[in-house]
Length: 305
Image (cartoon, rainbow, N blue to C red):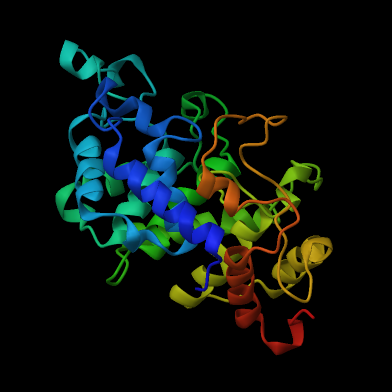
């Protein structure tokens, strides 16, 4: 995809940072995930742009080493899940959506994590709740049994997009149940009231990292129907297009929200590439590409002009 000079220079700056940073070696890699200027987030932006292959192989090796050696490989729900050895207590604890983001980066690069780190895919598949989603809050597994849309999408995408063989029965059920969850929530709505859960989700966000917006859900359903040979939820996707209408232009889809908004819940430090691709009101070629994929599935009668 064509990028402008500012973005090209920012990509080079992120690559220099990734190659030179000491974040991989300090504090058990904890600083690599610092919002939003840690090494993993530089990599995630490149992944979401479709530029993951620009990440140097040496950096990929360091990132994989962090996941292999410095992460507690169990989602802590109860006391029994907690580490007992002092060496394990120093390891990072992860949640579903963050782990799935990191998995997608390395798989998108071409790593075979299902051979090298099979526990990651097993983790994601293991934590689906009865309603079809996942939740990064441990209490959801012992009390509410209700999922979070934000927690759900990255794991679903990880399995949907990064399986280069026929899905197993478990994987197929995981993806289908996830689609059911999204459809029952009409992408952004409460099942109980039918009201939009969070109006911020109606604003296209780029890059997302693990944040949710309506296009992210639409993109999953469109691709799920294709890869799983399931009926396309046309009415729901058309409803989603109507909700996105104010962000559409003849040139493409405009960025409506920044995950790092200082006034929002996830404010934090940024870096040049993050800022270069996330300008509020800017037409995003990356969001537009995703929207075009949904429109392609719907057919020419739903094209926007």
